[in-house]
Length: 169
Image 1: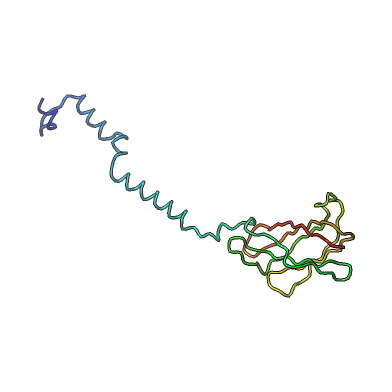
Image 2: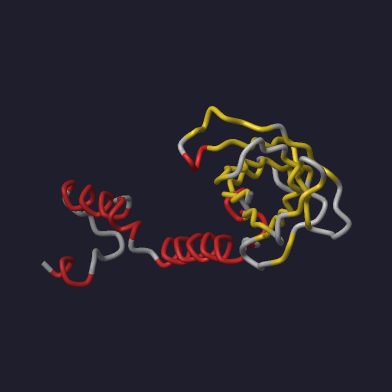
């Protein structure tokens, strides 16, 4: 009975079931989960994962939704065409984006319910950085929709935007 409290004595012979029970507890998964090494390993992995998430730079997760187009001044007439100045803005810092390439424009009367009525457009180089000029030959007055697509340096996807322009008489 002494071996139950103090463990077996050296050289004593234990019953077979006691030896198997002792071996089973030494190799059990439950006992392994409670070791200090496992807790330290789990803590280290969790700390590294959190540090990776927190320290990831914000610029690496930029998306086309981080940009917007806005009207950058009054409309001007140039012969029959209306010159529309547009600014592309990076929303997180509010700064205009220079060097973008306008890849597509569409000018239609969608805001007035006549999306089928379109007008030709032409992108013209502007003198100011971050400003893009678009000449639209609108045949009539009213509210026109200007859809723009642009490629921004460092972005893999194309930036899309839509503006409503009121063409006066």
